[in-house]
Image (spheres, rainbow, N blue to C red):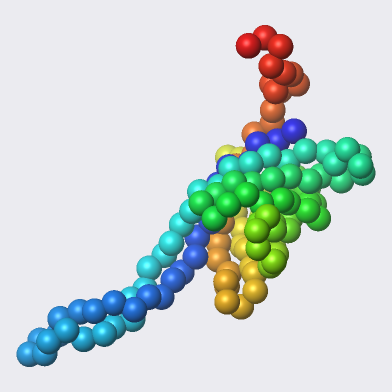
Length: 132
């Protein structure tokens, strides 16, 4: 089992107001980069031992990971929130120092962005509660 922790980024536009010289309030379009942290895990699918599956949590809710493909240099998966219909595709490449960097893409109204994460191998017995 692997823990996955990271951040995804998305550029956003929003409507706001501003004061312009010699004018009163004026509507303007603002721009910002939004980010959200996520955490979860990847594990071997008990129904299909040759496949990885997983789950993530972030401020938008819980999600399931499917179509997980992992090698030493790349990590890909599909993320689907439990209460939403669309799927988000993630595609990472390994960088130095254990950092994975990549992109995500979803339906046009959601858009796309960048993401970074780290993976941590969970030692055998980590989730065993017999010793607590």
